[in-house]
Image (cartoon, rainbow over all chains, first blue to last red; front, side, top):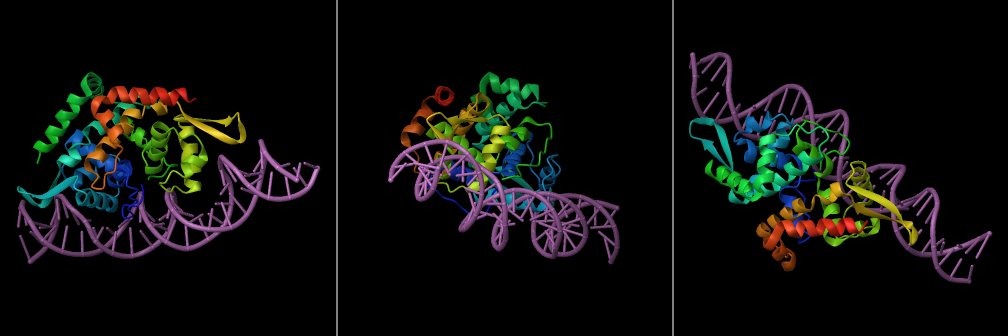
Length: 139
Length: 139
DNA sequence: AACGCCTACTTTCAATTTGCAAGCAGACTT
DNA sequence: AAGTCTGCTTGCAAATTGAAAGTAGGCGTT
């Protein structure tokens, strides 16, 4: 989406949210971290959505600069970094589930994970809390 | 955000959702329709966020083509059109509230409407249902 | 019925962003 | 010491955006 550099800052929390994560690739990265448990650059790059490497680097830097994710060296492999969500980032779990739910309901070619959708319908808030907790535990 | 023309279609409902409304301006338009009750081109244009007229026209066409909104002549003023959300579009109410909630929690310069946030915390689902119903009633 | 004004766009064009491909640097492995 | 793995950076062309001006048809007024 939109320029990651230019801040709009209309003083509206909604617009702030969009500045921070309101573009396709940022949302997909967060989805992958939250729902798939992805942690490395390579995982994001080959996640199937086809993000370009320069865009990925840009988005990761932007998300980190805004405090949604943090990166640390992998203790077991010094050439790799491990990314993880902060609480600010993990608090997007409910939003991610709403997006998934809407998509599953209206996507004409829906091939949604039945198990995931069932859990969302069953108890959204509890599922979101669990995803958040799991993400934070991966720290 | 993202190109409105190119479809990614990875078969994932999440990606479908992003194709349909996953960019800054589409989300702001839907927010204005849902929370502010905006209905005309002119209202969107002068909503304070500063969308360019060509982008607005493009987004409205895209949202209509994807069945989230519909447009009709204003019976009381033939040079004006009235836009309204379909059920598919109004079903984004919960998602909009999640974005607003997150933004209000983390925006350092938050000047959120207290009343709106209070209602979200009080009973998200009920508030979302009310917004949806009100939007559909504006048909 | 002519004139201007209102409302919703369309067009033009420069600037920004994206996407692809190749290249680079530091950390392991052999 | 050489090759590989991992995470980026760089260079460009193509696509998207944004600003500004222009177009079209409905309305109101004269």
